[in-house]
Image 1 (cartoon, rainbow, N blue to C red):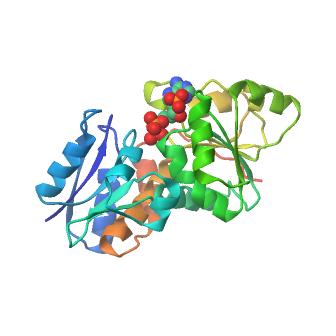
Image 2 (cartoon, helix red, strand yellow):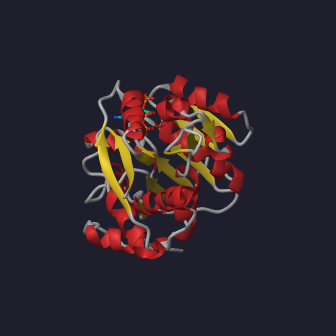
Length: 284
Ligand code: ATR
């Protein structure tokens, strides 16, 4: 049976194996998909070991998406444009081919739940591999993006990487002024890894408004710390990253097998499965 895996740290709560199992069942494809926990400084060795021992393809998650970009011999244009890789496979000629399905998966989910429109003004909090991976499809869709991050230089590096007038960054302290000056965002995305430690990023609470959409790339069995914070302060339109997780997994599955699975039923199943602590989303 063909071997696939998801590499990350931490990884034990990853829902990717169950999602890929559901896709495999749905499409009649036989595959073995497992979680691999990678020590922080050992990513490259683990990947080479995996492919040497029969691995066919893999997903890469936090914090290795930029490392994954660096080890690929060939990149899809999506991966090239995002500077981060979340999906890899071994080609017939023994080369590692990297793709990035995060951005397209996020866009698909945001469209599914009607959180986005062309021309939406988006504030992304965080400037790591996850942020890099989602920017290109959002800009291509027609959005205008501002990044704010704990370490300003990391946000600046991303802006310099993309070089487009549709992307800029702010210092955290300037976010306060921006809000006072009534700069409006339609959608705020938490792309920090703060939720993994049960924390929220340090952003002003004045950012919370009932008519703004809040999306957390992170997910867990209950409401994420960021979404709970938004909700408690009056944010009503909130969503975690489960839908994105399934959508990006579907593009990865298609990258490996050439078949696009039906995501709607899988999103529903996964949400039921983890007993998602739902707050009904108020739609306009
Ligand atoms: P990922 O692949 O998930 O993006 P990453 O590359 O390690 O992981 O990036 C994590 C991002 O979350 C970074 O932007 C990090 O901020 P710094 O650039 O200052 O390191 C941000 N982050 C992590 N923990 C955070 C916290 N507690 N508060 C705010 N930002 C945090």
